[in-house]
Length: 104
Image 1: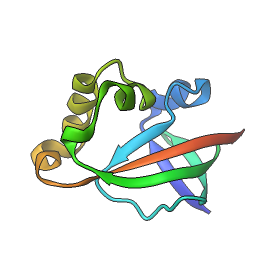
Image 2 (image 1 turned 120 degrees about the vertical axis):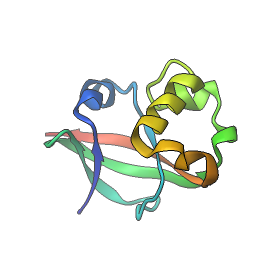
Image 3 (image 1 turned 30 degrees about the vertical axis):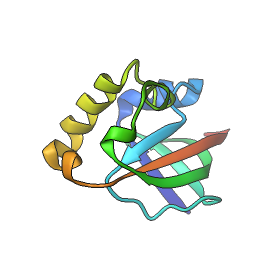
């Protein structure tokens, strides 16, 4: 089974349902995929991938930022820059929506 990995600091966000999506530069995930979720090096559960779609940085709004667990677009973009650097400004990004279906 595929694994969707997160930084350890997002564990509580995922478990509580605060974080229901993630934005990545690349992904091999597809809607319907069943995946293990890991936060840090810890497996925290399983999820089903609900949606995968491309978007630009300009398409990210406050609703999408909150779905990703952040208070605002600026907070989310700051986090993306800390992970990927300035490359996010020149590329299409991948939005991955998921539903937590089981906890380890």
